Image (cartoon, rainbow, N blue to C red; front, side):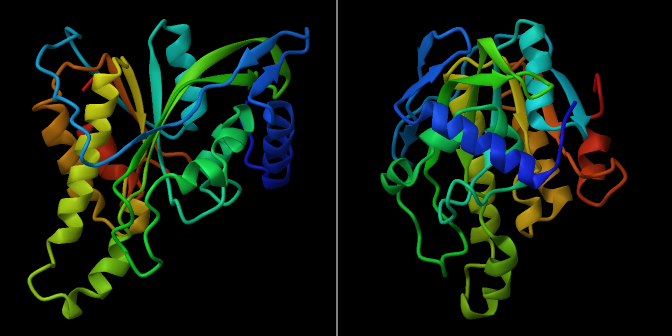
Length: 268
């Protein structure tokens, strides 16, 4: 069961932050669990492209379920799931997309993704539509609530990668003032898509839950789908066991979801 009630989501996120304020989560049974720290991955860090396949076959799917629900299913299948979330580092941890709020409501992200941790990354000026290309990797986040939003005694661990999509709607509106740079926005988009896959592969994750990265910021969904397809069927072919595009709030016939549904249909 999932919810989109903003008041409940905010209440749960604040509840989690209260329990996690000191870097520990205390279970209802009194056990303290140390929380992970975010890992900032700078653009110039060398992370190799995978050279060996780890999966005999990659299963692709496009779902309208929330990312967390899909990740919990992957955990039941004994996979190592990683959720990729669009991030805007100019926002506080309480002003995020619905997908992020649903995730934060179940986890300690509202606590560990504090202004202090974000301050360690490069935050661009508001006029910089390309945003930052810094990636934040948060390994093994304890999910402290079940599907009924009850606190649990035995949290399960998910991981997250946060990447800021370039705001291409703003970028293209300024293209006339940027001679010779009209392709720079799409280049930044593809670079970040490739780097998020590279980080996930390097960390050994078997299952990825991906957003329609950049589509809500003005990118062409057909172009984004093509970028993902070229990478997932090229350099990252058979690296992951399961790749799911999570599109909560969209129907599969919508302008954003349809290209993903066509190119990454279940058992594609």
